[in-house]
Amino acid sequence: MPDTKEPMKTMQPVPEESPANGKIRVKLICPLYPVTTMEADSVLIPAVDGDILILPNRAPIFFNLTAGRMIVYNKGEKPVSFLVSSGICEVRRNLCPVLAWGGFEEKIDAEKIAKQLKKAEEVFVGYRSGLGKTEAASRIEFFKKILEELDYHSPDKKSDKN
Image 1 (tube, rainbow, N blue to C red):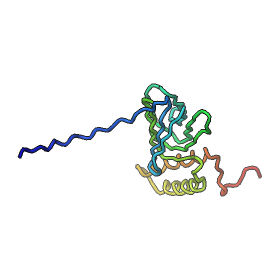
Image 2 (cartoon, one colour):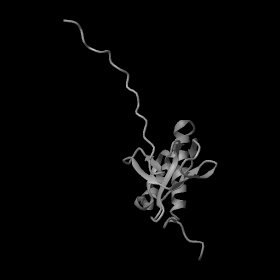
Image 3 (cartoon, rainbow, N blue to C red):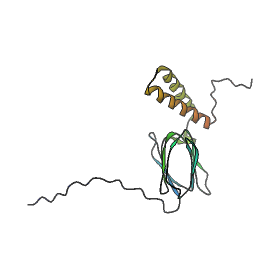
Image 4 (cartoon, rainbow, N blue to C red):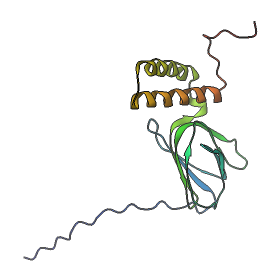
């Protein structure tokens, strides 16, 4: 009996289809949360060189993010706000995947972020140099930026209004 087994084919990624409704498909990919996908009329993303407003049918672009507020806009709806950290974004064919730490702004607990900031600062002091110190410094910058975006003021610090 002849061998009818076909050779294994290499798996090819299936490209994601662009939205057919003229909108942008925004996908926030974050290590700690499920992938969040939504369609939008526009999205404002905090980039290293300044905020970038992404509109439908824009030219492809790839850029680095900085910690800040990413806002997804749809006509007639309340904007959806995310707080994100450094990461990357690639816009092409009305697809906008964002790879970063972050989450829905209304679900972020400022007290927990303040505690994580304090812990990161303690860890930072423990490092003399190297990758660990660089990572701790990056986390400190991220937590400070998130607290700034949330307009959070630590109850531990005395007010200057006295």
